[in-house]
Amino acid sequence: MYIKLDMPDSDKYDVIDLNTGVRIPGVQEANDETGDFSIIMKDTFTDDWIVKNTIAANESELVVFHFKGNIKIIKKGE
Image (cartoon, rainbow, N blue to C red; front, side, top):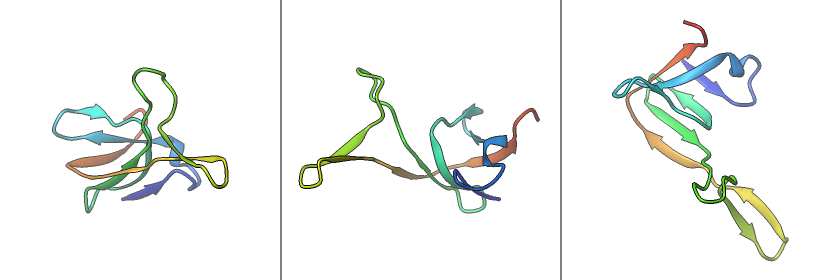
């Protein structure tokens, strides 16, 4: 199964790490057939989303981290 944050009903699913049984927070995109997933993360000191600043445009952009793991996409409540 494949989900992406901007897809309809994507909020009805969780991505689970099958090695630990724990929900993976901040998932933006996931494919449990390939094990590929992308997340955004919060800074543990400031609790702000991790961003990279573009000095020329004076804007911030979320940093997306890409991983490959043993994951499963499940419908919430199952």
